Amino acid sequence: MQCYLKLNNCTFASSMQSNSTSTLQVEINNKSIIKMALPISMAILIPQLNFVTNNIFLGHFTDDPAALAVAGITGVYYLIFAAIGYGLNNGLQTLIARRAGENRPEEIGKLFSQGIITGLILAITGILLTYTLTPVLFGAIIKDSVTLDKAISFLQIRIWGLPFLYVYQLRNALLVGTNQSRYLVAGTIAEASANVILDYLLIFGFGAIPALGFNGAAIASILAEAIGMLVIYWVIHRKGITKQFSLFTNISWNTEVQGSIFNISAPLMFQHAISIVSWQYFFLLVEHQGSMALKVSNVMRNVFGVFGCFCWAFAATANSMISNIIGQGRLEEVPGLINKIIRISLSTVFFVVLVLNFFPGSFLSLFGQGPLFIEEAIPVLRVVTAALLLSCIATVFLNAVTASGNTRITLLIEIGAIISYCTYIYLSLEYFQLSLTIAWMSEWIYWLCLLTPSFLYMRSNRWKGKRI
Image (cartoon, rainbow, N blue to C red; front, side):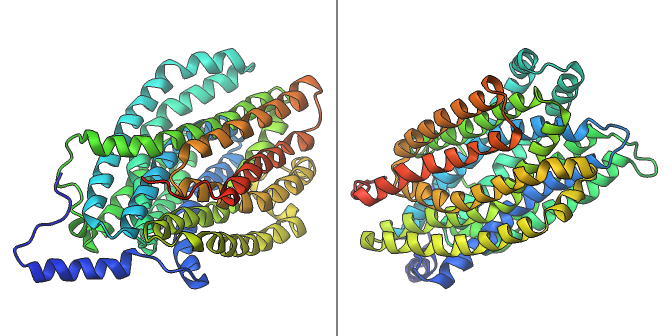
């Protein structure tokens, strides 16, 4: 595929290359970090708010009191596939940011278009698995037949949003990797607005629109993802980014570029997938403890999703900026950049943690489950907010390893963390049958197991010299 627009006017081409140097190569300072991280946090936050909106509406849908509990299982299942897309996005972002740092804009369009092809193949695979393998697996684990039927029915609708989600996610790789994260906001606002309106209309019904309840939330989410995708690509086109990098000019399969994407992204896709699979395992074990435990855990997932978005935004910033400055040959500045990003991330999340711990009842009452639910959830919330602080540090160091191009190392780190996590939750929930609060301390184990080896690896300087 021809990615760099060939022009007869050599002066214009030279000028464009000069401009790309100033816009694609990042500088290290607090302003640059915040400028990149804030739009990313919005892009991550708003889809998570969609999950919360679904759960708030479902919590108040009195015709189906089990909906909020089942939403915990189905939400995490869909997150498995979202995490695979996130892994593809992270790998592509690393490659795009590296090419931006090397001032090679002609390669960016190639990478992005091939990433779209990969994303659509993965989406088709996810749809097929949901209709064939998932009912068998869930049937073997979920004890309650009503929960099982609701979960399968919901997922076989919800999974059709996957193609829109993957293509939508990849705009992160393009815009963050080329230091243009400010354009992320338009698509996320469109998606969030659509989701809130459609959730209300399709869950509760309005006028001629029937109340679809739990499955209405699935349809609303699909339509919202499609709207968000269309809006962001309209923005990309209007801002001239499509022309700048010659996006979509040739969408035929390119084995060489696909090989580069696979080499970097495959370990990340597997890494993120097994991370959420372990969370699915956690929720399936929690289901054995009853509906209340499942409802509390679902809300805690929302806490991680919404308030953890700031951690992941700064982690994505670390990925892009570190890969970019490595591409510029400024390896000695990487440790200082990591420290800057961690300080800003911790400061932001610490404020959120304080608010949640001072006013837990006000937050938990949003889900309309009554005083017993709030009483059960408050101690779990304390544990989860402490884990959020740990995740601020762990995600930045883990993404620093990713940015260096050593994605196989991040995979090995993730596997070690997952083994420790799954062992803990099995022992606490099934073997010793301890409280839900103690079971959620598994998050402390997980983040510490990610942080320690990532920190030691970056400190060892073995990441230097890696070429991607």
